[in-house]
Image 1 (tube, protein in one colour):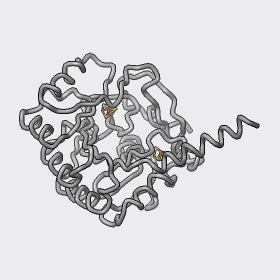
Image 2 (cartoon, rainbow, N blue to C red):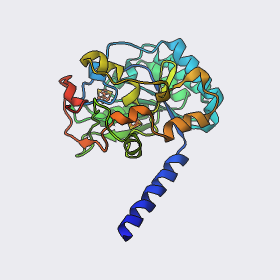
Image 3 (cartoon, helix red, strand yellow):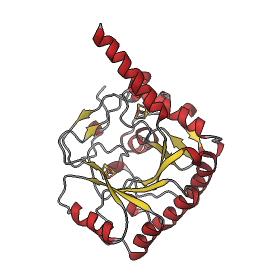
Length: 277
Ligand code: SF4
Ligand code: SF4
């Protein structure tokens, strides 16, 4: 009995903490990537070489900065591989313009950092943009790129170290959508990763980027309007928090918690993302 009470207490505490979480917005600039990781949550191994049009990206930043900026703690440019975005410096400037006081980040696997031009480094330093590097178990000198960031006066953080045991997950989807959406959402590892894709805001990339999976494998993971917000119609941070804090219909596809798997290259096989029927 004590155990059950403790479990309920812990669940209530977790629920309260999650609701109090400040907003984080992830602006997806591309899903194309220079790595090819099995089970990527942006489906990058399946994604075409496409980039978010800058004008649309700026419009989304402008609107969200205006209606919800006060409650946004952190905003990110994210991929795929963010550094491949052809208009990256313009995107960095737009992000700072619309989120002047927030902590701003570029998510990257770091591989392209040694090739970035001087203008990238001065822009990042001037705009106080933090480079958040995820380390993967590949033959690459991550210490050297962290040092490179320091030499250029740019703050860096390690966002995750995927070379550690149990640090890579398989977020499988149920093609029949038979999962309990409420439970999946409660157990969700991606909660709070609000993804701005074009003029839509999704609660996570697993839902927002699923069209790559559908196109590559003919799956039918569908959205209905309750799965996202139309950015131009958002009026307040409250609407965004509601999208984040409540299950959306798409959560019925998510099998959670995820299995931890060994890191490896993608074979672009459907089983990396979809549970067998
Ligand atoms: S580096 Fe990140 S975005 Fe690129 S394939 Fe790997 S998990 Fe996906
Ligand atoms: S669809 Fe729902 S349960 Fe699945 S990853 Fe997104 S927020 Fe989490």
